[in-house]
Length: 133
Image 1: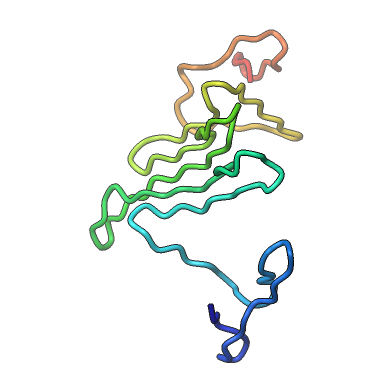
Image 2: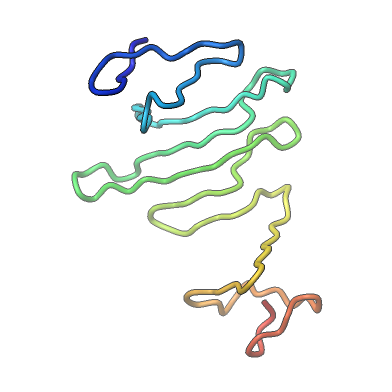
C-alpha cells in the first residue's frame, strides 16, 4: 500500500515485527464504510477476536442534517460490550451492565442541566447545595 508522504511524495511505512510504523507518515486516517469501525486486537489475548472497538453509525444522512451515533466498546469476560455510547438524537450512556461507573474528579464535578432524577444518596458522597454529588 502506498500512502501519502511528505511534500506529496508517495512513501511506504516501515515494517517491523509489531506491524507498520506510521509515525511521521500520516496526519489523519479515514475509515469509509456504511458503519465504520476501528478494531483493536491485543496479540496477548488468546482468542484472536476483537478486544476493543470504536464504531459509528449514521442515523440521518442528509447533507447538513447528519446524525452519527458513536460507541466505544471493550471485551468484558470475553464479550464485546459498549461502555460509552453517544446517541446523536438522545443522550450519552456511560458504563456497561456488568460495570460500575466511578467518576474521579480531582477538583470539581459539575452537572449541567436538569438533575432532578437519578442522584444517588450515598452518605460517602459530599453534600453540595443539598444534593449529594
